[in-house]
Length: 463
Image (cartoon, rainbow, N blue to C red):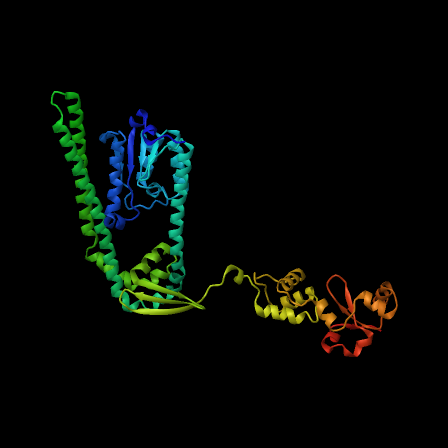
């Protein structure tokens, strides 16, 4: 049984820093989902309630606007892992597992490091010790569910991939009347991204100002006679002032660069880009991701209706619409299914030919199996058995042909005598090849004249 939350936190944990990791997947989420961001920052109060001093709580929020699918591009997450690995973290906080990582390998790597360094993990639901089996099991399940959630999101988006591919050439046909709107859409998109980045940088400046004011109030409240503490708080205040200055300078520098980004020269390039859209689309150097972004600038929405065929109704930014009907894609099993025409030909050839002979005829005509393979006797036999085509034995039986034992009984001789006479050509009845294993069927002497002409032509008359 796991100990209560208060018992999980020890003095050794409180001697190390508490790391609060804050992340949103996109800049749009940062700008619009402010409540979610604030909830993440509010976890700081949980650390204070567990006994950490305010100065020992470090907020890592440099990954705002970064996806959690991978750790490769997340500097903040890499910093967090480094702090844990160096044994400088007693507590790692995230609103939920998906804030820290949506990749199982990254999540379990962090769990292993927290277990080795005896670092606790806290989320909105509770406090966990990765060294305890039950806590580690629960954290592992949460990581798996987080990755599964990302997989489901991607799976829902895969449905749009077919429609995007299908309307590739369609876009090129309707591009000319939309060229101006494309240019404006590109410009609006760039401007929107600039505004989102500016808002994010401004929030960092505001946060730096708040921390300066907080450091100032702490310094002003200290007893002047307590010089050791006063000196430390004064140094902390000066550090925050430098951070505020750097954040303000960075904000102003980036804002100036953004102002120069959309100048007249850039606007001319955007309009030129709209006119050369078909060339850019067909360029092999254009990646799939770039093509997706180009489509987002052109298309308002797509309605897909699946019936016997797939009907795509595309609505463009300017209000123009197009309807496209495409065949429903075959399933994997249907794609590998041999065509009905080939099966019908096999069924017809079975009246006069063995499996190997049928394979030779099909290959001569250039026909292939459902898996695009040439035919042989084994493949023909398996195919007719799976499709339950009437066997050659059944067909000959229905026409009155006899087996070896039956013809021997009819003529009053032994089967060996039938074989010997067949070999010497003195049997006196028509013989048909039954299969590719040297077995034959024999015409009933009593119904010789009733034998169908097409079967008689496929067999040899022996005298």
